[in-house]
Length: 183
Image (cartoon, rainbow, N blue to C red; front, side, top):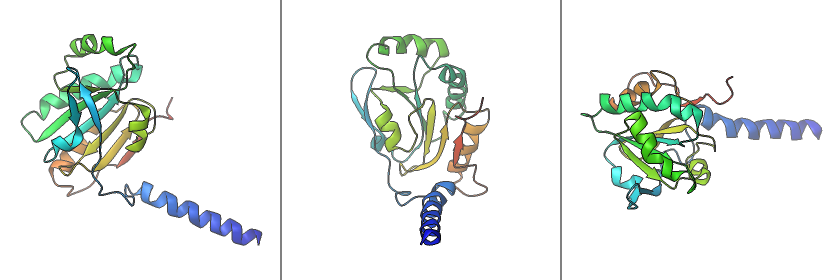
């Protein structure tokens, strides 16, 4: 009986882990959904960006790793300005720190859209965990095709965008990267 339970448990664990390891799940082709507010208070939705590749970065003004990766995002947004690629910064700052967002944008010369009001619930729903920074790369159908949890490294943004611009043809970059456990 013990062996059967152990085998059943291992089979269940393997079945649960395999889709995550290959970047797929039962909802792999389901469009991502997120509705927040822009800096002017207008409601904004991911669904309005269909037809474009979206780099959705969750960050906060108080987050040290977010400060380190922000220049990479800014440079990439400039590099892909003439392509069908949109960068969105989803701030998880609470009301007490939201007033710091405009100064943060100036400090890093952020010219792409910043959305406010994101929460860890939004991040978890998009399979991004609950620690910032976290970034999702969405295809033109608004389906998340790659994720980076933790501070991105040089070249990781471009690898994923270029792959999506090639309609996911050619060698795929790692579809899930976790930089959270590194010291």
